[in-house]
Image 1 (cartoon, one colour):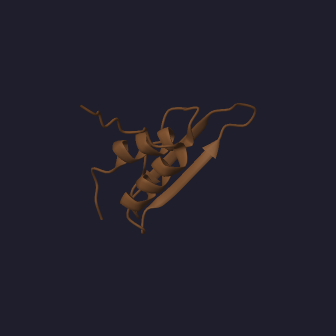
Image 2 (tube, helix red, strand yellow):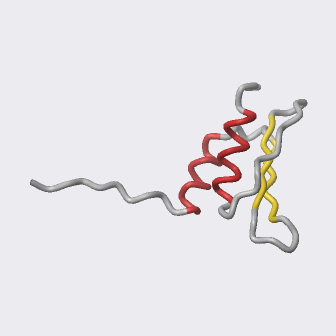
Image 3 (tube, rainbow, N blue to C red):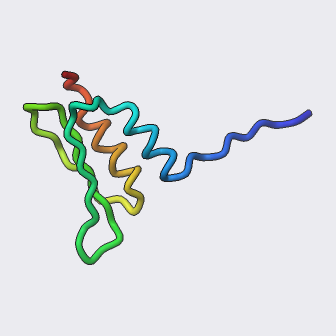
Length: 75
């Protein structure tokens, strides 16, 4: 009997998936912290204030955290 093990998404694939889910009208910012190998992200609807993600070594993880924190307000 064979097994079907799903391969985890690469960082780029995860980023593509997230950017496809975030509405085009939303503000998206992903920044690397100066002097560190850590990333933070901010996503928010127009006219709303968003919350920055915690620092992450993978920019896709930072974007996912920000999207989860700020998606409760859909415009």
